[in-house]
Image 1 (cartoon, rainbow, N blue to C red):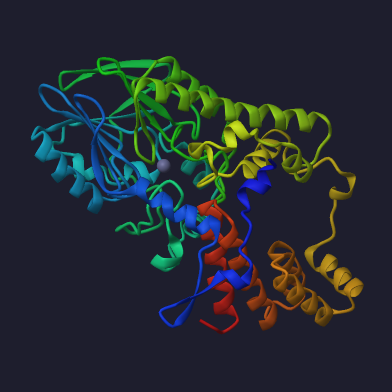
Image 2: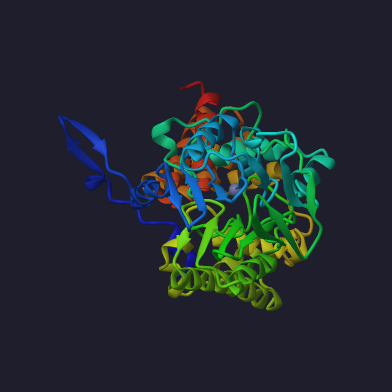
Length: 458
Ligand SMILES: [Zn+2]
């Protein structure tokens, strides 16, 4: 099955998409919407006992927070997205073990895993562990003065959407964090006191022996935590139940796809009986963990190797996304479905990560400006009114991607063309309805809201 066939689910014909319900017509959910909604069970609020001494709080905010109970105190792994939800977790953890937090360990520097930290700082001498280079991704962008990822991140998360529109973000429930600034802002209030430089650092704290292993994957500041006594691994975002976000549409420096597969492999080689994921619920049971991580690693490697094969045949990114087809044995696994990341984006990112923007086609060396291209397309079509006619036809035929592309031509020439603004909003809403990948869905719908505002509607 082609990747595109998997991620763009067919839309129901209009006549069955409208159901008479309680006297009014209610649009039925598309397959993608229904599947995304059914995912919400993964985000129910819960504290899961993972092993004798390990408890993981899920569904409070957007990322799990774990507690390991030792003789003299507890260790916290990742601290959630905001202090409000993490205070709730702290209170619930106290009911299970009323002992002081002696160490906090960050698997990486993303705000959704760190910004709740102050809820766990019981005493000023709490050890705070992270990998050297903590916050690398955000700092790389900030050092260059690049800020747009915050706004794009909010669109990918869908903060401007209504609760009904948003559903979830694919790996976490729809949550509006109670804090100032964007989720991806780098305002860490609690700084690490201890850094893991490279390799494996053995740490004894609270009567617990833990191993922190530097392991680049999603980011260059990732580590995983290994608790040998109970054979539990805490993977950070190098593993969660979804196709991994090998490229984030909010915009990030290249994420090393091959290293990500290696990071999964390192955890696999520990032979864990449980793995606490960076998002979604933990995977428990040696055989299940082994099978899950094996497929996860192999699927990433397959995509990487096949992309490189295509690159070496001289393919462009647009050709590669047709060429690289994930085998059914991966596509059929729920934990590899593109709820959050999307294989097509990863293929493009690999190309760009190694070869940069030039696709290899001489035509692309100095392309026409958007305006020059739009003028010529309008001329071929017979004017902008003819283009608008084609847009209407495309929308009627539910050819939403084409409709959106045609709208861009009209809007390049006439940025305030109300019909084109509204048609594009409709086209993006149609695309949102068909896509399983929640970040794309949120981005489409957030864009549609902006377009409708520009058109003067609501
Ligand atoms: Zn995360």
